[in-house]
Image (cartoon, rainbow, N blue to C red; front, side, top):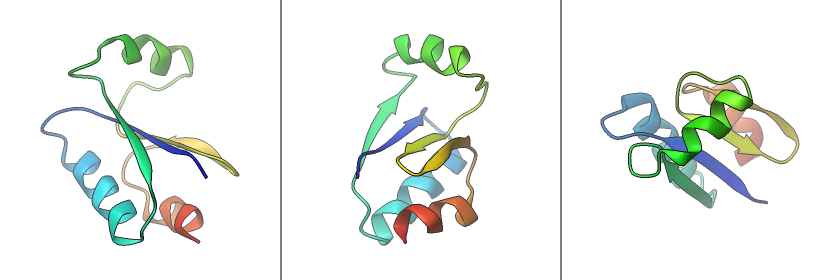
Length: 75
């Protein structure tokens, strides 16, 4: 399962999301929009204006620290 987390520097919700996934042994790929601003356009094109944004198979993409959604991914 490929999980992608879009994050930025100094973002507490981003850190909490990544920690949750790590603690539940969910591998993820991180795209930092501070270091890679090209991802900002991608997120805006998909209707997101805040990070973290999490994309994973089987669940709609979502933003923010959402333990209810993250639990579905960690399943």
